[in-house]
Structures are given as C-alpha cells and as structure tokens.
Length: 114
Length: 115
Image (cartoon, rainbow over all chains, first blue to last red):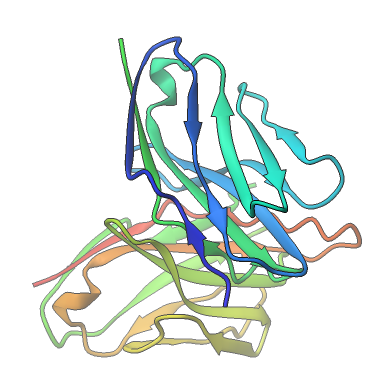
C-alpha cells in the first residue's frame, strides 16, 4: 500500500526567507502527487499537482515542487515566503486514476514570522 | 457554484448517540469520499463512492456507514458515537477525465466532539 512521509511536523521561518517542505512517498508504478494547503479553520485547497510531463510544477502564488522518481520525493519549495503563507501543508498521493482514494502525509505546519 | 457543502460545521454528541453528517456537491462529480483529520495523522479515508449506488470502505471505516442514492449527496452516518470519533471530518469530490486529471475538491469540514 502507498504511504506518504512528511518528516517535518513544523517549520518556522522568517518572512522573505526560502523554505522547503519535504515529502517522500513509497514507490509505485503509476502515481499522482499533490500538495494541499489548509488555512486555519478551513478546508483543504489544492496548491499544485504532478500528473505527468515536466517534473517541475508551479503554483500561482510562487510555490513549486519537483517530482523526483529515483528518490521518490515531491518536495515543496518557495524562494521567499510571506506571513500569509502560514498554514498547514499536506502532501498526498493517489495510485493511478483513484482520486477518491488519496493517501495523505501527516502534514507540515509552516509558521512564518515577521 | 457552491462546490462541496458540508453540514453542520460543528456538532457535540453524547456517547452512544447517532447522527448524520451531510455532504453535497454541485459539480456533477462521480467520485466522493469522506476523510477524518486527527492531529499529527493527516487525513485518513473512511469511505468512498465511485458513483451512485456504489460505496466501499477506506482505511478507517469502523463505526461509520455511508450510502450514495444520488450523484450529489454522500451522507456519513455515525451509528453509536464514541469519544474516539472526535475529529474533523472532510468530504471531498473528484472526477475522472480523459486526461486523467484527478484533483479532489474539499468541503469546509465538520468539527465533531463526542463527550
């Protein structure tokens, strides 16, 4: 069965500093990868996704993630964070076309300090 | 479009009580799922449905029932609430398409406390 590991439960960082949130998944023949963001007391919103093609995917608010098949990783990065990026970030994976059956990591709380 | 709508937003139950968490989506998605979110554990799949009349168990189904009589609705029933079911519950819907784009859309969640 698939599994997702987010090693960092909390990442504190100063505003305008770069950040990397790590995500590793167990190997699978066909896998789709997602990053979701959850702001306080809200639901989950899709940040970005990897389905196929270019291994580097970007979001509209400056985040990017790179799919690395050999290392089974999908780390999330942002070169300069803002206070408004404070949230919990979840990495998720699905086997093939099973979007109804996402496997989530335990989440990483990003805390951006002024 | 409202997207995925969950009701209620908050609920307190006594041990042994039953209740139904409602979930409705207006995007005509075939797939719907229920997850529970607990601190330090991410989201775990309870039940899912790949179409009206079809449901199946996820990772943590015990104590919960579901049904899918229409494409739009996917209620989650707690038969006899237990303190271990204190959690935040999320409903999600998604679709299958030719390009296999498989994004899941989430509701705002229901925070359930069982005392």
